[in-house]
Image 1 (cartoon, one colour):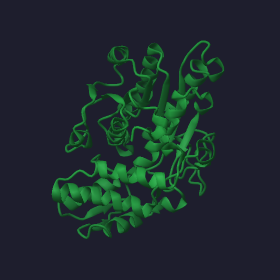
Image 2: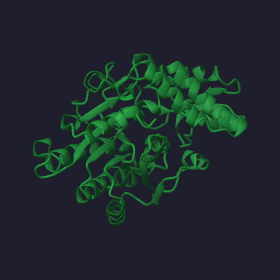
Image 3: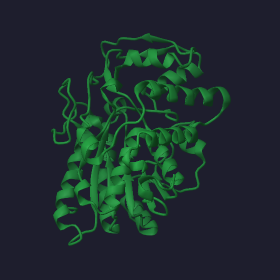
Length: 364
């Protein structure tokens, strides 16, 4: 593992905000496997059970709010990270309707304060994670490109669009690549990914989580929006993209300090109902019912990303097709609920092996 991404993360001090969340916990696990010195900064794990505690990693874990600039500065000055992966966020669409103030405070002002802490600590590289929902979604059948306008119907999506605009402003105002190594030493990239699934996610109002919790309670899962189409990908897919971008920034390749999309190939765009039917193949206890609510909150029906830039410029490709993604995800939860076994290590090893077989650049 230490040789992945040209060995760039071995012995590097890496700070990950949101490390107690689903995607963050997988990222810190992968970084540890590559020999990084990991510092996590986040609120307490949002669910019980949660992935980060199951992993029991030897990392520095700072429990703090990204809206707390004093604590952020104290953490950055103490540990002096060379690269920051900013994942901390209020990540749920439905919760954003219930609590828009906290959503905007966290996703916009929290991001602003992380950037300020990075600037003060002269961090070498920042990989800012937003969302595919940051785009102004017109329900097009084709994917959104990195230069399409930001937008957002609901408070969560809008807050992510704002965070992306904020990152672009900081990239122009403080981390401009024209002034790199002259007035500053920081490269900033933004990454957007679609729906990610995998073991260890227990956040509410997420399809796979709802399915697995229902199985554990021997109940039918209720499907709100069966025909909504999403680009489903395993959590390791966008993480490989984030790490690849981080590698380029640490190598001082300033042309990579831009926005990047990471999503599955077209076959990964599947309706919610077909997802349930797919996962049911791997665990016969799964059952569902469609529960249409005329008063349900607005959620996008169709949202895809165009990842041509990552494919061509970064030479990034997705590794697992949707069939493998669903199989790996269900097997993770099945092993946990039936045998109290955590398959995170096995999944990462399998993913890296498959990526090496495809001779992807980050594995060579």
